[in-house]
Length: 170
Image: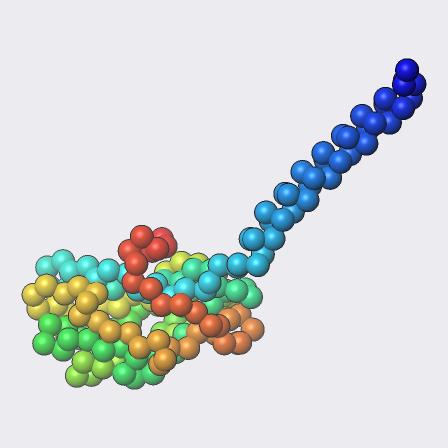
């Protein structure tokens, strides 16, 4: 016959082993979240045209280190169909100011910055234009090699570029 104290010790040991296993499984599941952090992404929204006036929204998501605080797109980093798109201008959103822009003959670029904070996610620049006929995102080309994003500490952000509508942030 086994003593009552020994039975209790075995139950406690079994309970501790079960809890230890559950904790180990839970922590191993959490390491997936930290080993695959979300990728900072620049999102190009679908172009919208109403009555001859069009808009294209630029947004970001998953920005690190206090968020994105600046963007620079070298002239030629944005190419567009000049036969369908005219008078292209950039407007800053959510505290972003457009510091410089140049859109001529189907090529353009811009620089924009936030004066006091970074943006972890959200819309930051609206491109507005006069449209002739149907204008979609396919009428624009963004060259990732000519785009630079800076974080709140003025460090470069490595990012992905997407046009996926389902990825769009609001």
